[in-house]
Every structure is written in C-alpha cells, then in structure tokens.
Length: 446
Image 1 (tube, rainbow, N blue to C red):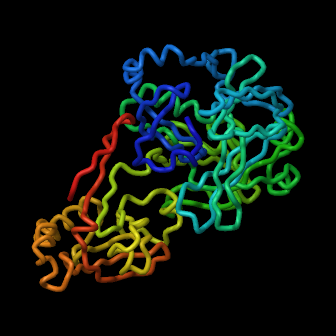
Image 2 (spheres, helix red, strand yellow):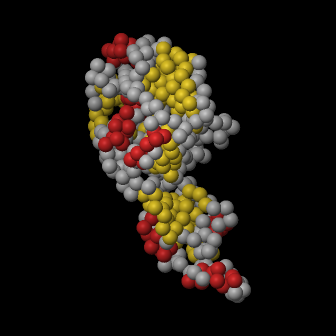
Image 3 (cartoon, rainbow, N blue to C red):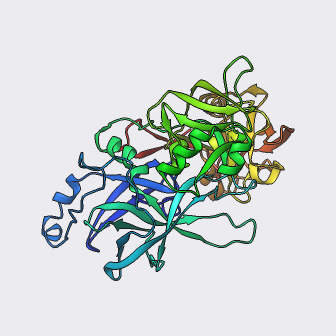
C-alpha cells in the first residue's frame, strides 16, 4: 500500500523495493475511490530470482487489528491511545517513533471545483502527537500497545488552486481498507466491492438534531455508545439524483442507522462494502421513516483503456467528471493533450466529451478507434524516406487530414473545431489492460 499522491497514474509500471536491495515491477491494482490509499500488486515469484538478496531482507510479521475473533473488524485507535509508528525509508531504513492518538475528526474532500483529480469523500481520521515525519516515503503503519497494526499514517494530498501547498498528515484506521486488502489477496479479476450512497454529509450537534426531529431515545443511545460530543449526520448534497419514482435521500435527511446498525461515525456511512442495497432509518421533516435504497458501485481502477489521437488523450469519464458534468453526451472524455499537438492547438477546451469525429457519431472508445483507423493517412507511412529524398513537403502540408471534431464541455456547451491530424509526430495509439489486478498495460498502434 502507498499514499495516493505517490501512485498517481494507473497506466504506469511501478517498482517495489525490498530492504533497499530487491526491486520488482508492480502494477497499480487498486486506487481506493474513497480514501487516499493505493494498492500495488507484484509477482512474488520474481523474488525467487533474487534469492541471495532476499535472504538479507527482514519481513515484518506484525498482526493486523481485527484478524482475531476477539477484536471487532471495525476496531479503531481511540483518543489517548499510546501507539508506535513505523516508517520505512530508502535512505534510513525503518524508523520507530512512539506517539499518542491526539484527536479524531472528520476530514472533507481534498479537491475544489476546479480539480478533475480524485476527490475523496468525507471520512474520520486521527491525529498523532508528536506528528511523525515521513521523509522520503509516503506512508507508515501505526501499531497499538500489543504490536498490532491498527492504522496507517500517510500524506493526504490537497489541491493547489486555493494557494495551499502539499497536503496534510492524517491517520486512517486499518479497518477502513481491510476489505479491499483481503479481496485483492484472493480475487483474480478487478475488485469492485466499494459501494456508496452517492450523497455528501455534514454534521449536526445533538441539540440541533433534537430540534430537527431526532428522538430523545436515539440521542441518549448515542451518548451512551460514544460521548456527549457525538453528532448526527445530515445529507448536504446529492451527487447522483435518481429517477423521480425511485426512493432516494434528500438534502436535510438525517441518517440514524444503516441495516439496523446505529450510525456513530461518518465511517459508518462513507463506505458500504459489498452491499448492493442498504436499509436506512432516517429523519425527514421531523418524522422517522425507513428507506431501502440501491447503492452505487465505485471503481478502483479509473480506466482500462486509453486512446491517444492527434495528441489528445481519451478515456471513459471517471466519477469526479460525472459529478461535475452538466450532462453526459458520450462515454468518451478528453482530459489532457500534448503541448503543440493538433488537439491542443485547435480545440479551445481539451477537457471535453467527444460526440463526433469526422462527422461520425462517437459514443464509446471503440467507436473512436474504428473511426480513427479509417482516418490513417498513407502519405505518413513513408514520411522519413521522403524527407531524405527532399520530397516530404511537396504539397506544402504536413501529411494528415482535416477532421471536424464535435464535443460538449462539462458546462454543457457544444464545441466544434477542425484539426489537421499529424500522423508522423502525433500518431494514433492505444493502451489496454486486462481484467485481472495483476495484468500489465499493453500498447498498440491504431
């Protein structure tokens, strides 16, 4: 596992280093859609090829909280706990620091409205004193008094559009990511167990909750179960509105329980692993009622297919894009381009849903690939030979074709532009990745 700001691109091949000696290639198997954690997967058989070096590498045998039946799966590190933080470093080895859990608080999204990168849902994190520096790594493990791993100490990235720099250090309970970790250990295909309610929550004090209709009995239960500073969680934003005839949450709803379990922390709501349906007890307009709602599946690998054409990159839109978009006219989204490329030079906005290429409708990446294949310019195939013969620019134009491209911006504005493809300097290609977590990316020309 590593912090999300270290493994930022699912198309890269990463290197895992053991003890500063053994290096093996790895793929980004899963980028958690809710928490700033990424999971890398490597082939352990590659370690056998470095048998002499592996013998000098110490592998920890620390247990994880929740492995035994005596400890609940969702156990957490409480305020006041004495803990030990282990941080690995390529230059300094493993550093061990004693600390105390100072606080537990709700952390909000790490992105603003301008960000198209990963936007994390609100979750409960913990703070440590002293705050442990990570140095040249991005993650450490936090162990309880019995030496069991109870949390992760990591760097949570933030956007820079508001002038903030870098990010912040937060602690994340290991129970929040255990289900993904266990699934990745056993699953061959893509892990898709993360489910959400597709809403955002804010906290309200118990005094405010009483005014909004939460019963005294429920408030007393919350105080007995946790502490007098407990809060309730109220829906503040709908991220994906359902059809009018479907039951759904509304802004202002207070969620009391999920599948019969009282909601004590935001972590009880943020992620509903492997639950396609959720039974909620809510308060709406000062009246308690029960809702049974479908959950929304979130992918941990934003894409398995990327197409590059005329210098622009296209893939399926990810969740953050779908939330921001005024409408979704196609399943093809351009998100960046090479500087100086035809797409970069001619289209006023490269973050666009592509709806047509060469006046042919585009709905999927397969549509785009089929059209692009038919646009290939024969003159580009022997371009280098004609350059040597001094005949490359006899026509006065770079080999390529004039192509009309149509699209729709995130705001819903329709765009149309004419680009001249440059099949020599910006050829068309694609990369694909198979369905398994261990599959690597493969490149092919279009």
